[in-house]
Structures are given as C-alpha cells and as structure tokens.
Amino acid sequence: MRIAFLGMQRAGVECLKFLVESGENVVCVIPNKNEKGSWYPSICEYAESKNIEVFAPKRISSVKSVEYLKTLDIDLMFSVQYDQILRQNVIDVPKLACLNLHFALLPKYRGCAPIAWNLINGEEYAGATVHYIDPGVDTGDVVSQMKVKIEDSDTAYSLYQKVTDISVKLFKHTFSTIKDGSFPRMPQSDIDSLYYNMHALDFKKKQLDWTKANDALFNWVRGYIFDPIQFPYFVFKGQNALVKRISRSVTKEVKGEEFQIIGIDGKSISVQLRGEIFTLEIDNFAECSFKVGDFVTD
Image 1 (cartoon, one colour):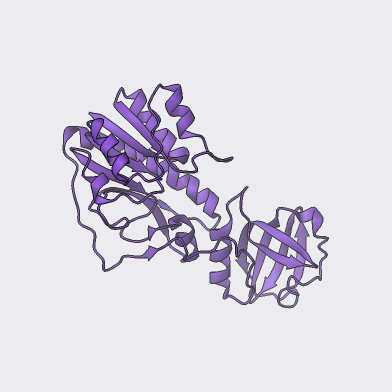
Image 2 (spheres, helix red, strand yellow):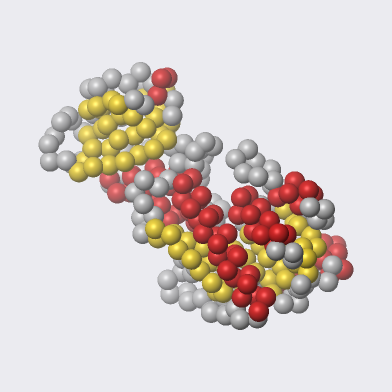
C-alpha cells in the first residue's frame, strides 16, 4: 500500500513512526506550513531521517500540486493535524481512501480549537475521531472514535496531551482495520453537531473576566492555559498575573470579601469568589507582590 501522510506535532510524528516501523510504504510526507515548533517534534526531520520525501506545497489543492500527487500512485492519504482544507481534487487522488484524524468526538467540535472548546463548554469527555474527508469541514463519514475523561485538573495543554495519546492508539487500531478491509463508514448526524471556525476564539484576548459565573470562569481559564506558550491573566497592581493552573472548592465559611486574596501558598493565591475558593497558581508569582487581603480586581 502506497501512503501519503499529512500532518504535524507529536500525534503526526508518532503515527508516521508507527507506519515506518511497521514496514509500510510511505511515499511522501506533507507537513503543515508552520511545522516546526518549540514544544513539539518536527515531522520533516523525522521523515528526512528515514529518507522519506517531504512535499511542502503552499496550496495542496493547486493544479500543480494535484498533478504531482497523481504521479505518486497513492492508495491511502491520511491526515493528522494537517492545516489545509483538502478540496475534492485532492480527495480523489488516493485509490482506497482519504482519511483524517480529528481531535474531537464528531459531530461535535468540527473545525478549530476543539480541545479548548471542550473545556470552555464544560464537557465531560473529549476524544478523537478517524473519518473520511469530504468537501466539508470534518463532516465526512466516521470510521472510528475513542474518548477520554476530562478532569477538573485538566488544562488545554494537559487535555491536548491526553487526546494526543488516545489519537495515536486510535490510529494504530484503525490502520489495522484498513489493511484487512473491515473498516466501517458511519454517516455523521447534524443534530448534535458543533462547528467553530478559526475566529470563534481569539487567543490574543486572554484577560480574565471576573464577572463570569464561577463555572464559566473556571472552564474558560482552563481552556486558555497551554503551558508553556500561553497563559490567561488578570491585571494586579499594573502587572499581568499569568495563571498557570486553577482549582476550586466550595466553602460555607466566608473568609473574606468577594475577589479578596485569603491565602498564599508557594506560588498560589486563594481567592474568595461567590461561595467558592478559587486557587490560582501564578507563573510569574515573584513579579506580582501579592499580599493576603489584596483584591484581584482593580
């Protein structure tokens, strides 16, 4: 079987590595436009170390790109975290199937930032789906799925790593069914579908809104924490206090006024907030000069 592999980040590298170590014939790797990052491995470096051709078109759906892909006589095209939408002319290239591994339990969370949205919306489970690629965005028939429990301690970064782990497991399982021809096709229902485009979340706007209800605030903060590259923050005495972790506990005892710091432990502050105590670990704690009795709101 001649395979074209598209993608990036840890999931992409580990899935590609599985194919290579299983002796599969990967004829080319197609990376994302910005495939090198400080917090994830390079799929190009891995491909080149295994003498696999790297094909990096600006537009994969261009006539020139598609004509080249046709010369590779591709049986299967598999996308893992790839950043370009595949048009019908690309989908039609492989003989067997054109598949994608999406970081959500489709039909929920089609589109962008599914990990963050799972947290922001207070979901109980996140997951991954292998599906056929069609001209829509994550709307193709489902082949397989796997889910993982979301814990209160999860942030976008920790949940991303958990979903990456199960995605690699799902890929390995699904590929075995592809080889023996037993993989199913289950049409998606639009009844429970959710779609978010790339503009639905603005990760540049990371300031906490203390007026949000407790559940909404707790979930929003976790959805924006992607340590070490992104932290939500609140302004404290002119300094942006970067929130690295958040937890909460219900209390019947009022220890202070609303939004008041009632305790400090290491790099964490505890804040009285509408019948609960929120504990926030601050990444730049030393720069903020917190004191018990201070208020976190201006």
